[in-house]
Image (tube, rainbow, N blue to C red; front, side, top):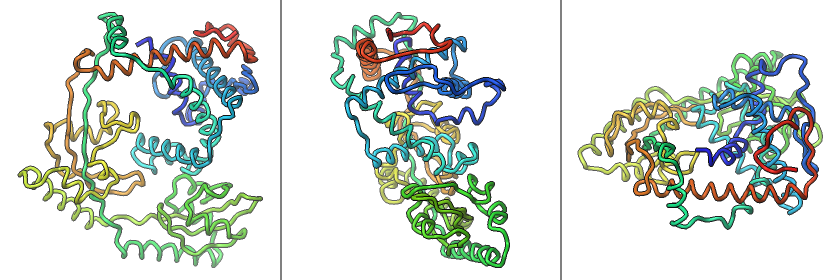
Length: 455
């Protein structure tokens, strides 16, 4: 619906991985083209041409471009102007975000990106970057965006809609433009992740011990990292993870890495990711650079088979009404989702509701064949670390696609009406504050037909 274009674009800007599009789609920027030049100044902030291009390429990759390239770039450019105006206001208002808040948001976004790819390993492999490299790239971007978010929240903090406004909003939508509410599902899961055996951990440590001895006897750490390390982001670089400051690495890894002198080899270090041996490369002030070899212990096929058989027996009890799914989750699930009754939470909305498009296809193909409250057979899965487990899935609820109406979809329509009212508040704020701020636009963006009054 046309009412929400502005808000949607702002949300898009706040959720991308910076510069990733440029890494994946170089053909859109012809050789010899000047990309990094200032195309706008807003207060003490500026916009580079490459900022607009990277946003545009990201949209191309996602297949969300509608309209001529020039028009879309002008819309993205205006969104960036809005972001920089908010950032300018954040400085004036002395808005501050703490390192802890930035780190928490980093973790939230990384969980979201991992969810989209299925596993951390797949994400790192696709972009050829480690999670730590992603966090490093995101840090300053997130800090700025959090300050921007604080200002935007203040603009709309007192905005609300009454029931009469909701009804009026809905009546003003042309009948042929009333949106179709797609099928929505709610899914629950019971996860059984077998523990990694002592024997498997012992075997991994023995392999690393052998590699360490080979290095001490003169073999190349880098060559062995390429051959044997299971860290996809750094293995190709001979295990080199680059410069890092304190607080960016696993605590156990960091405690050892910052003590190593150049060329020194650590003993075996255990972290969440698995087992490592680490070699110091250089120290530069408060930064340390090391390389490592990572080997991840695997769940044994026998333990996996036992987990599947256990869940199969639990599923039988549930089907016989001898045990409720909720109680089974509470008693037996090894996943954090057990804390909310096994409900799978949609990271895009923070709610239990999923559109069909948002669900992992592997989950959809299972629950699509189920009736409400029916439990599946055990399904093999991978967690965010790439470790295998089995789970039972239960379809909790499924809605039928239909045109929006006030009886069934009041909450959704209320949210639409609220977003429109917030958008109007933002437009008023732009018109008021743009007049008080130094704004200069250069080059072809001077020809854009802006939606708001910037000058």
